[in-house]
Length: 496
Image (cartoon, rainbow, N blue to C red; front, side, top):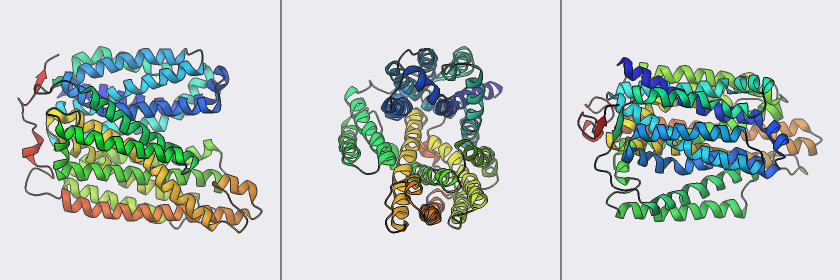
């Protein structure tokens, strides 16, 4: 057990690094853009290409880990991530950095599902899996919280490339300790990887993520809409091919388990709501309350801190109360937080806004931590990599869809409530164009209320679904033992 805990520490350090790596780049972008002479479109690609490639390759890498060995893929990814971090740090042009960031996204796609799948291998008991994944996600949130501080300290004393070099010592630790502390596991019955399925997977995910990000940035225009439609069409072809293959890239039989499917849907919709709510809240703090980006970021720290605590508290509560009840209670608490958001005034509303975010974050952390554990234990152990990749991909889609869909809803309500003669797509533009600033701020607050109200209704509906689908049924929890396939001897665990 001590070895497993040390191994969990190695895996949790990866989560910590990946979250710090994302948040640090936001601070480094202005300086590196000046140094490399990056244009505005190049700056967007420097920021976005990593998440595009990460989302695109998660499914492929999750399945690849099941086939060739999860530890093996993790170590290869760690080595690649370390080397590419050095390349990114010493990039001499914007184009070189964009390519390095793209390849870092591919390497990151090997680390995330492999980490969660190895947790599933190391901790066979569902409650232990839930607790371990709660710690893993807690470290991810710690990284999000301390990332700006770490980045600020680095950039105050070193050049912008130091933000990328931060990942190198983490990867060295993984490469040294991983072979000793992490078990190997692969599916002995898995066949060869299907290149056509890989291409169709990328052709599905990349256009949809790109389209959703463009919608969030520039609204609904022909190009992002076409990208989403193309991605969905390719997705249909991908699903059909998986149904015909004897050894598919993505085993669609995972979705036959209603526990697996319902929990994945809860995680996806929860991510959508929180992404949209956070977007509107951040805009409110800066454009309505007039805070600087730094001050707004500091007001968002409480929600990150309470989420870290709640992620660890969820598994502890689930030892005494059925996980379904803990998850449903969390969703109700999150809904209460968003109801509080519907009461935020257009002036002096920072306190209720932050209080609502704290409640919503504390609440959603309970189903987030426990739900990922359920997803991992609902799938057979030999499909843990695929299950982890689906969980991570749903998270990427959740953020993109939340910003696009709920952001569009907030913008539509905002524009409809603007004073006559004021036409603007953003509150910043409206403030610049309007004489009656109080009316503009009130219009944006109406948009915030609409997003919060929709989010609260979604959370309450998810609470009902959680109680109906995941409630205890006489087994050792909400998950069928028959489908978990977690007994020793299923698959090929290998000693280091």
